[in-house]
Image 1 (tube, rainbow, N blue to C red):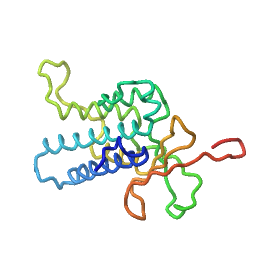
Image 2 (image 1 turned 30 degrees about the horizontal axis):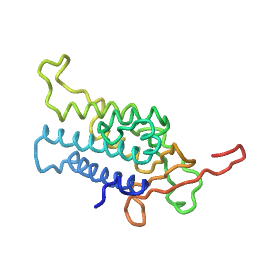
Image 3 (image 1 turned 180 degrees about the horizontal axis):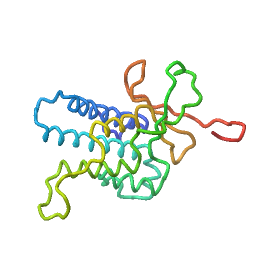
Length: 210
């Protein structure tokens, strides 16, 4: 299998989303009570590990989508590995990089022109950074001299966080920095069950470009 770096950007983005789906399947299996480990502490650590890997897939998918503008600013981009820091750097060069979730009318898949925005219960950019840090705390051994409580506050249940991540990505678009238009991403296409990434060009409306 070729490295995502060797693929055209849309195909590389789809590969990262496909890998992310595998992480979420493991999370869903564990939080639904089907873990072979039968140990709540280990289950929590594995779920947080899979969520953290999911965030890395989102971050590196964003990197391949915006490689040209990102590499022009950060010459050492090939050495960047922290998902949280990568997203912070992406925001500096392209503030509108983060995925935007939308709803797709089931009966109009082939002809739909407008997709309504999802307004709630999805993982926001701020929550992404928060949960990335929380998951990192869970999967790493704590320094015994670190100040503060030993109980990690996740804010929501891991089931809720996983649901918010899936709602963010189920059908989403990303606005590109270097060219007009967006990529529309469907995580499970109804025809073959695979990740599909579509290039969508802007259209002219009564008040200008949409």
